Amino acid sequence: MMNINIRPFHPKPLHRQKGVTLFIALIGLIAMALAGVALIRAVETSNLIAGNFAFRSSALHASDTGVEAAYTALASLTTASLDAASPSGCTVGCTYYPTMQAVNSAGIPTTVTWASVPGTTVNSDYIVRYVIERLCTGTPPITDLLQQCYAGASNGEGSKDGDDTVFTAANELYFRVTVRVEGPRNTISYAQTVFSH
Image (cartoon, rainbow, N blue to C red; front, top):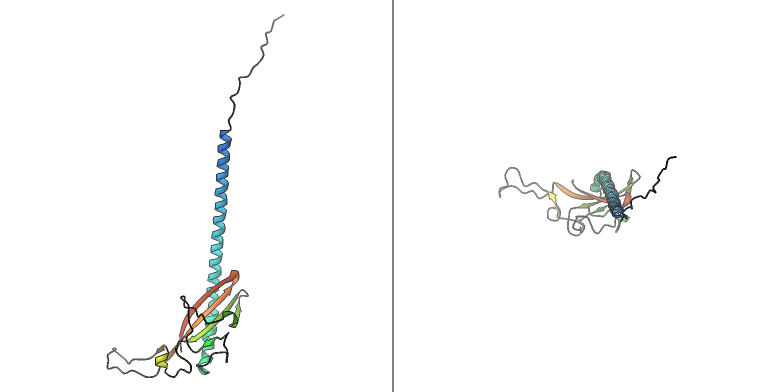
């Protein structure tokens, strides 16, 4: 018989692992997670800004309704008394003022209580309110339109020489219309225009 010599197998001792690779991998995962959260926040902020811009733009488009309504109302105001606020006897909630109102730095009348001004609902989301001011100063009744109002008066034809005829009657008066539109997400937009009549 054959003599088989079996030697016991002794694996080489492994070097003890220190876990540095695992630590570096965890740091990388944390960095990628933070970058992902930052990206999600940036996308959310961009969507919020785009949504707010869309609401503001829609509110501005809705202001056309107020400008048209004010233009229509101006025709009836010019046949009635221009020296009385409208509706007659109003102290708040007026849609027409015979003189210019105090304004803030943006040119918006500060004496108007907007919640009291009648509004029209547009597209079931926007409330449109307008105020008309005759661009005159002083206390009504206004008797001297050329001195107390912004008026388009002719100064004669041709050049502006000192000898030109100056007419004493105003050809047209100017009215400032301020439109306020209230929309979704507390969107508030103002638009102003000036009409002559």
